[in-house]
Amino acid sequence: MKILFKRIEKPDYKPDIKSYLKNSGFKALKKALRMKPEDILNEIKKSGLVGRGGAGFPTGLKWESAYKTQDFPKYVVCNADEGEPGTFKDRIILEKDPHSIIEAMIICAYTIKAKCGFIYIRGEYFKAYEVLKKAIKEVEAYGFLGENILDSNFSFKIFLYKGAGSYVCGEETALLDSLEGRKGQSRIKPPFPTFVGFKNKPTVLNNVETLANIPHIILKGGEWFSKIGSKNSPGTKLYCLSGDIKKPGVYELPTNVTLRDLIYKYAGGPKGKIKVILPGGVSSPVLLKKDLDVIMDYKEVEKKGSMLGSGAVIVINEKRCIVDINKRILDFFNYESCGRCAPCREGIKRAKEILEFISEAKADLSDLELLKELQEVLFDTSRCGLGQAALNCVRSSIDKFYEEFKEHIVEKRCKVGVCRVGR
Image 1: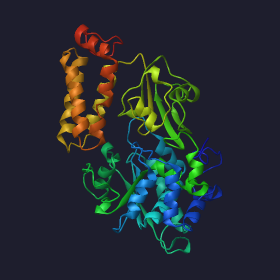
Image 2 (image 1 turned 90 degrees about the vertical axis):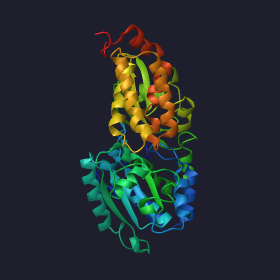
Image 3 (image 1 turned 180 degrees about the vertical axis):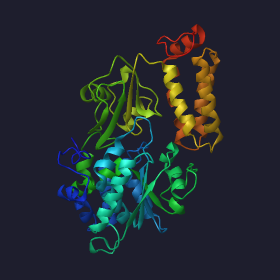
């Protein structure tokens, strides 16, 4: 079943307002403007929609929190800073169906009584930026955006803001700091952005994929949406499959799909024998072949000791070295850490050094225990999700591939011949 890709996959569909209007565009907004904000909130809550950016927080509750906060002005922000390795789903929506995001933001603004919104887009998304810029102008020209929208007393403007390439700005409070003109660094929570957000005012931040669902829910009802996919996380999900896979790409599927079907039925199967799967990108603990029948929703993946995150499913085959995989992951996190909190700044750097020692036969077994301790410290004390999740893959890899780590340390051997150990 397709919801988000239904328009996009039509051969004659173009990312312009005429195509959007021919395919039910802005019908949801027209309907929403005839509804009370409370009724819109009830439909969103009834749908069971949860955030698709990684946290999985109920969208209706987030909107309701901002709606009930009596502090003005309020703001709506679309988080389009897609920077997680293996994640490329939002770019497709931004480039091919930008008006759906704009319509959703207008509906959100009407609901919480906001007059201003921002789309914070990843700096490297040059094409998406131009497509969005054109789309905003089109929507303004047609009277769906600006002053007295559709002859109502409701006014709303959207501004497009390009990020500078920092991964940590995908975290909502770091994004807000960047949006305000400061270095993108996370804030301590609580307070949450729905209470103290942009310029310390109530702000709703939603991911691109989350927002893209809103017009469909308003048009067809929350009950319709709640019956699709799993009960825990209703609807469809955009799963990004990459790595050692025959047909990498973005697949929209109901959230009750299994990991096995994702890989074998839709993505053509793995290239070689599966060693590990990262179900939620490089921030997630690894899953093994025995976990292939897990349902790919937030709670079910969590029960397996991992996390779904943004749905970046990375398949890794047996020709890869588990030490080298984790070393590369920590190269990324070490580079992207904003450096604001010491546990993340120093902890990731130290973990990276230990993995380098292991790959060069300069470590001992006690270093594996130190890596586990570092993971616990970072998880408990880091300021934001980057530090908290940075060593998830390392910790789970040690637990599940202890013998492979031991081979590097004791036998000074990398069985796949990737590491410098033994050379």
